[in-house]
Each structure stands twice: as structure tokens, then as C-alpha cells.
Amino acid sequence: QVQLVQSGAEVKKPGASVKLSCKASGYTFTNYAIHWVRQAPGQRLEWMGYINAAIGDTKYSQKFQGRVTITRDTSARTAYMELSSLRSEDTAVYYCAREVLRWFDPWGQGTLVTVSS
Amino acid sequence: EIVLTQSPATLSLSPGERATLSCRASQSVSDYLAWYQQKPGQAPRVLIYDASNRATGIPARFSGSGSGTDFTLTISSLEPEDFAVYYCQQRSIWLTFGGGTKVEIK
Image 1: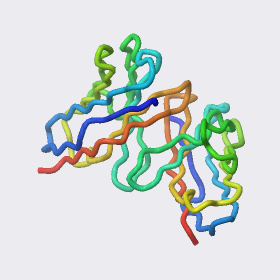
Image 2 (image 1 turned 120 degrees about the vertical axis):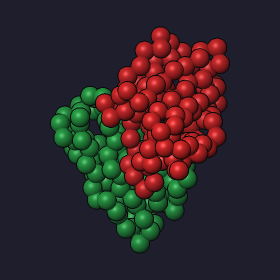
Image 3 (image 1 turned 180 degrees about the vertical axis):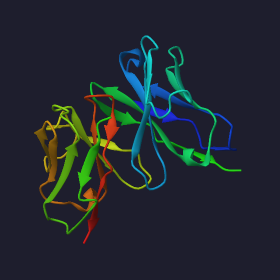
């Protein structure tokens, strides 16, 4: 079945960077875009950006522009999201999700990133 | 940025009752609106796409309606597993999510 499996939880210090992975299975990886969405504790879902898995083109939310980089490795069927200059407000669960036309299905299981000194 | 406003923030209902959730967009999103259900500790799951189409495997008690700026998700008769948080999402201009509606047991 179609599945996205994300890397494990991370604990980082303020100012550091984190790179998360999202491995796809059950479909042709290059046929769909992969998006990254985060959710801080008790907060709404927040879109960060996406990558066109076929050509590698990316688009980022203005809020994260300059701090986020999304890449992919087609041979590994994996997308990556790197967030730099971490601060405490970046503590959140980070999800990857496959875009099907204009909606997301499925989502990865989520990766908790904790930023703390 | 298109802002999606969901109401109410919390809906307290009993199993078997009808739930009506609202999502209002700050400008027209045509019918490029989806609804998701999220349970504690889980990733969101798509219920409705393009405003009114049920996703694969979603029970018929879930229905979506609306276009332009006003949208509704209706759960005709609440089952115990339906108590969760529901989000709307637009993909007309960039991508944004609403603030969510929590459907809780009364």
C-alpha cells in the first residue's frame, strides 16, 4: 500500500539545523509532489513547502524562506527537509505528505523535533 | 495569503447527533478545498477533497459542500470514532489550513 515513513525524533539546541527524511513506498515516487507540514503543540497545521519529485523544483512558504531546504533522492525514493537556525518555537511534529492533485494522501507518521538548550 | 476561518472552535455533541462544521475563506478558493480528520497522536487523514468528494474508504455519513468562500463538512450521525479535530485546507493560492474544529463528546 502507499506509505510514507519518516525518520525518528530529534533533539536539537537553538541555532542548530535538523534534517528529516520521508521514505515513500507503494507508488511511483516521481509522479507526485511531497509536502512538509508542521504542527506545534496544540497549534494548527502549518505548511512549509514542497518538492516536485520528478524534476526537483521546490516552493517554500514565505515564513520559512531562507531557513528551509527540501530535497529528494529519487533512487532512494526519499524526500528530505532541512530546517536551519532552530529556535524554541520550531519545536513541533513535522509531517511529510504526498500531494494528490490538490490534497494530501497519505501523510507520514510524523517526526517530533524538540529544540531546547 | 488566504486565511481559512473554522467555526465553531469546539462542538460538543452526543453520538448519533448531526455535526455541522464551517470553513470560511478570506477570498474565493473555487472548490479547491479539502477536509481532514486528526485524532490525538495521529497524522491527519483526508475525508473530503475538491469541496464535496469523499476520499477512498470514507463512510457516507461524511459529506462536504460549498464553493467560493463558504464550505461545510457534515457528519450525519456521529459514531464514537468520529470525535476528533477537523481541519480544512485550500490549494487555490499557495496552501493554507484552517485553525480546526474539535468535535468532543457531550
